[in-house]
Length: 458
Image (cartoon, rainbow, N blue to C red; front, side, top):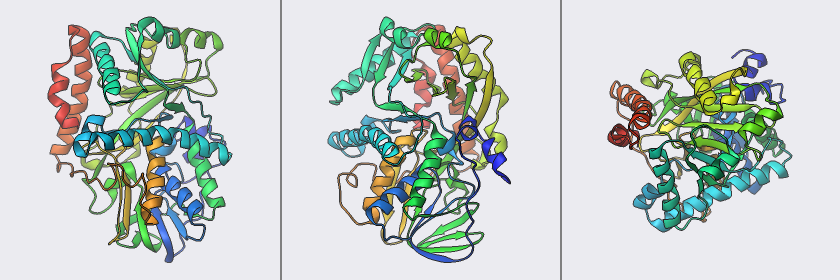
């Protein structure tokens, strides 16, 4: 990137953030601080925010290769949800049912905490807590919806409601709706406004952000950059989908691209037909994930997986634009909402999200080396990063708390397979999920293919 205009072209969100996106000064040589944070996305900003609030005396330096909110934090689908990438069953198997339930409660609370901070700090991120509708549009999808609601009840949660076809269509009038699940624990938002607002907020609290400062290595008590070394008691890695570029971490977290399209602002007559009156976020129970929201300026934003995983976990701008995937997304959303026929799609973009081998996000701090980390959110990071920031605050300050006792704290995911096995496995898995959805539409039965590749995809 060479100019603010290039940053504005990253996504609809960057273009409409109301921010000139002028880069902050780069690092100008070696410095010493208390806490160095690598990455100015949500994880880095939330960690800096809570540390600066708890200990105003701390010298905190954030290092960012591009500009705050450049990556997934500024480009995502705008869901602040209580979703955690590892299932309740997986977390319970790792520890206990009680610990898994505590993680779920913490995730639900994190949605409200994001809203609280945005309000308290005057960050206008177009937040609307309308919840999430996940439609069932085939018989196998309906079976999964019923199973999800039953599992939530069995775990003691009260946050998943099974809707009838009529109830679901009254809120989101898509084609072929047989039912849906609904949870209130999600807010639609403008991700770049939140990211940029958090960056400005932490600066007011005394945090220093150096942009255009690429970290080339993270070592005990040091973050090495092209412009100097930052020495710190604690160095926090908050790099998510960009983690594989760091030495020694090429197999820790892989980048998988998620792509998004957006319509022009739609008239009220179209929204009267579609629904989403409370700006609910939405998806359906297919295998290959899709997601959408109604923006504050009445656009429909719709995204999904399906872009190929790049060999060697390479991050490159060309992976952010896949015309075949963009076309599929536009076709899919028009098929779901025929009223969109003839609608102009004004924006298309994408970016990498981070996936750990066991699909379980983690946060932790090695007190011996001073190295902290958080990540592996699998696209569920808008609220999970907030929980990570509060947890890292407690870990850095040496405080035992309910947050530091959660099951994801200190979790170590196994490494991904070496290439070419990683490239083959991930891309076969992505293709299989697409085929599995087609299989279910044809047979009306749960996909055997999806069951076969499930272990590969965590």
